Image (cartoon, rainbow, N blue to C red; front, side, top):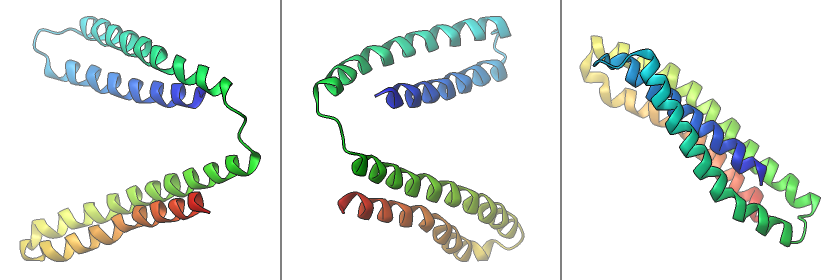
Amino acid sequence: MYSILILGSAVLFTICAGLYLDFRSRGRGISGAKARSAVLGVMIFLFAMLCMSVIPVLAAETAEASVSSADTYRYIGASLAIGLACVGAGIAVGYVGAAACGIIGEKPELLGKTLIFLGLAEGIAVYGIVISILILMM
């Protein structure tokens, strides 16, 4: 499964970019070159470990029978349901959260109402998970 390798690489890149920004922002005697070399070393090590962990999965995949095209479309549909629902929930929570922070700053007694609206926005992701489970069970 090359998708595991691609997704794992994206996660590792995100982690290492966060480490670089953290090292650079602290400014405790760590220059940009030292931070880059430290993060690059961590990235190479983690990528090597990821490749080593994917090799048995790739070997097992070749030994199994191929998956039918109906199963493939089912998995694609389930992943799209979760992915798009989570993107929508993230956008909704961003707007609602920003508005909630502004309201709470002016009227702290409205905290409970803003939490209800945040929960409703977060419910979009739950709907996506339910739909993907229904797709996978059929």
